[in-house]
Amino acid sequence: MKKILNLLVMSVLLTVAFTSCDDDEPSFDKKPFANTELLSILKTKGFTVEAGMLVIDNKVKETKTLDLSGTKLADFTGLELFPNLMELNLANNGYEKVFDFAKLPANIKSVDLSNNNLYEFKGLATVDVANAKVTVNRKFDKMIVPNTAKYNVETLPFYFKENGCADMQMQNKDGKAEKYTTLREIPDATLRAYLQKELPSKFEGDKFDIYKNWGLDDKTKTVNLNSIGEWGEDQTIETNPTTLEGIEYILNDNRWQGAFSSQFRSFDDKTKGSLYTVDYIKLSAGCTAMKLATISTKILDLTNAKSLFDVNISENNEVKKIDISNTLLFQRGEKSILGFGGDLLQIQKCAELEEIVLPDLSKIQTKPVGVITLIFAELPKLKTNLDVSPMEVWVGTLVFFNLPSTVTIKYPNNVDLSYIKEEGAGAVSFVLDAERNKTTSAKEFIEKNKLELVEDDYFFGQMLFPGSIVYQKDLPK
Image (cartoon, rainbow, N blue to C red; front, side, top):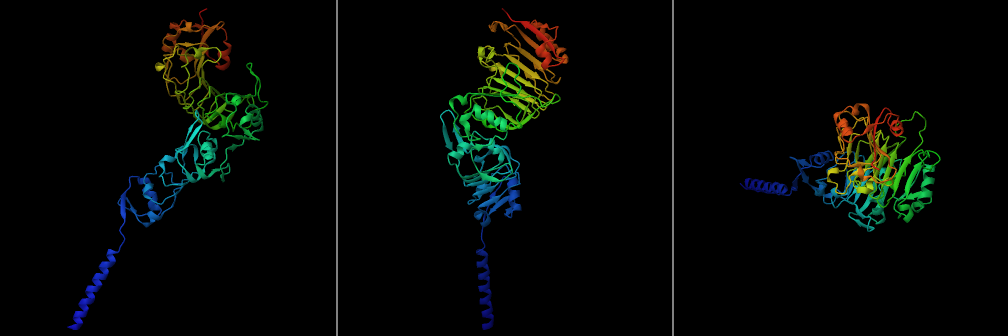
């Protein structure tokens, strides 16, 4: 009996012991996780996922560093569930053009963005150029940015100088991360010598300082790279540069209020298309004129170009979209049609261009709506229609030449050339290719405005547009 009693007691004790052990099993919260892409990545890294939810266990709570390189992750929603996460590796993620730091959780203090194709960095600082004020929006202990960040002039130099990041690094051309600096090399000796002569206030020795303030004269100066010396212009450089790397530091600086012009000698008579490629242009808000001739642009962003009224983009082999809707083109009233300093728009020989975005001419209040010269020519892949019907006047030449037949053109509805009061202005010209000349809309425009066919070879038209058909109209005296 005593033996049976002892067995019962032991059984009870064992039951209590096992129950106690079960009660000591840790219990963790499970959080719903809408970001399925990140959830899948976390699962491959050993984090516990149950029924589409992340288990907030000790691994999650103790994680301070997370390697998300090569994952191409763009949505960081859910990382806020890692309470001690401070360091993210986002290298080799295929990020293009823009990275927004505001999308990262507030507790992240270190970010590696190396080997991404990034030029713009949002959420770090607000730069008020007009009032020379910089506000740091987000501080970091460490940051590595790719080599393409060297072209960022609007944010990173100011963020760096305001100590936004204690350890800020940038990859060099060989991919090695080095301490960030605002000094930039101008690799080509010809270009460097010209810029040192024209813009001395921006140089420290042989290097261009993207942070330094512009001198009063340099700030509004025209950068004119001319190796030809034709059309009445002086030759400014003796030979063509081997590369134009460095012009981005000028064109992208919102403090610069000058103009840019390029005219280069072809390497031989057979040379066609671009001579140069420039990676990234986000044109300054202060730039008034931009002539990019024989220069291809991987990224051409004119959304900030609010002072621009003179645009020439020709022989650009890479640009696919040109958006000039935020510029001053057509919108300066009589200033737009002044012989000197008027508005000009020339988009020509852009082999890959598919889209042109014009200002909404119907909403322009300042009259007349006009330009000196308007040229759309040799754009074989253009898809967008061209509506300039609200335009009232042009002073020089209006050209629609060798555009796809699928592109519809709406010509000016009510042309009033009496706006032109300059003496010796002569005649306005209208240039078409043979196929466009046969269209009903072109014939109606020509008849309505009493344009006369030019019988003799028209020098300007025939030189720039071989095989073109040219009409003219004498201006009122």
